[in-house]
Length: 267
Image (cartoon, rainbow, N blue to C red; front, side, top):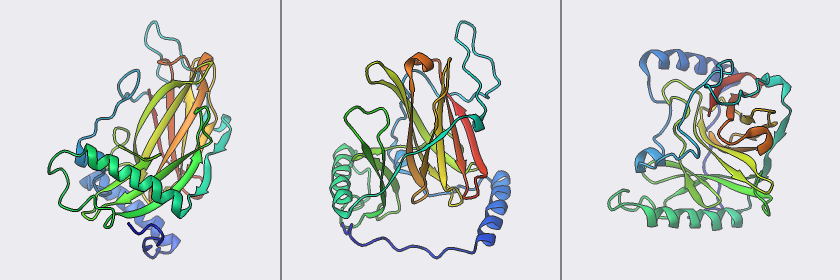
């Protein structure tokens, strides 16, 4: 795998053309439901999405809590502070070590004939991006490595800390600017609620934000920049405020002007 040579970058269209194309594609997609991007590893391999504590649900911020369940606070988006998780690109050596680990684990877990011959050969897989983000809610850890890859047969996939992660379950690939998979878990002592969101997006999306709302408060918006139309973002809320199982996750995708292109509440 040649990880020291950056992959070729397609020439960018002028800003006006990009925005105009975006508007036209969205309108056409709603009518024709044309897929917006290449199938991901999760779809190709049948990876299940596991969400600790329950199944995926869509619920608006104004919907009342079910009977017997504490009400989740309603905090307008603009009232939560933001915190960037971006720590910059990984070095070639850091990216290479993690890439080899991720590919080896995926190859070992693959079913017979799951991949066309040679498609997981490190010599033919293209490393598209490798970036560090802050490791929120992970005692003893300061950062996490997020990488994206493209196989020889054009299967795109995402790795976090050397492990392949799926990104489907939230959003519609035919109509939305962002799709992804989320999970949550209890971490630390005293315990806190940690949420994660792995995603793929359209090119016009430049950052993705995630926050947790519990029964007594909300976390700041965690913000990550988009690299290779993808990324991974985490948020943490003290359990006294979250009460695991009685919380919701707010997800947003924004363009470079700050315009919100995608909004979803899950949990």
